[in-house]
Image 1: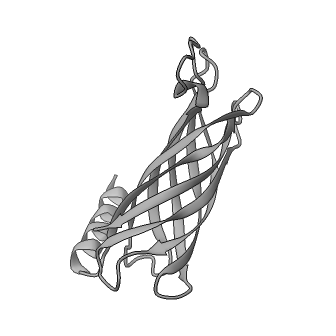
Image 2: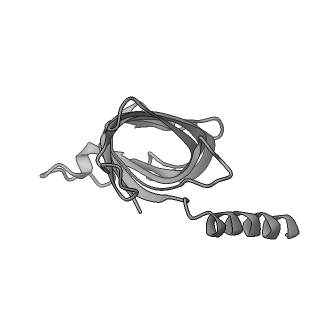
Length: 178
């Protein structure tokens, strides 16, 4: 308990004492596939994330994301399926960015993944694994500290226990630096 309290105090002190700390929020929406103990299912993918530029990580920003992917039939009109499979979960990854000029950038990420497998109506299992991502985009801030970043990317998540769910996504994303 004391270690958690000390770690929390260090993180809070670091973020308060350095005024250059950036926080950003964003998300993505796209398509892809996912599976658990099933055949691959095509679906839409979405995510919401929060990222921080903590002084503890000079080149790698920590990002916490909520992921949701569901069968395409859930959003199509005139489908009367009693159950549409889905996966949901969280990932915590380190993200690094390389700028090619003032606007264009490439972003890579790798981290830990926790997925809730709901591919069958009677399946509700939490699994643990890794996630990797690659994105390219444009920084629309024009030398301002606040503003938008937009682009396209791909993400792949795989787990290693229980029902072995995994997903892949090709998406467009937005990010707002606060």
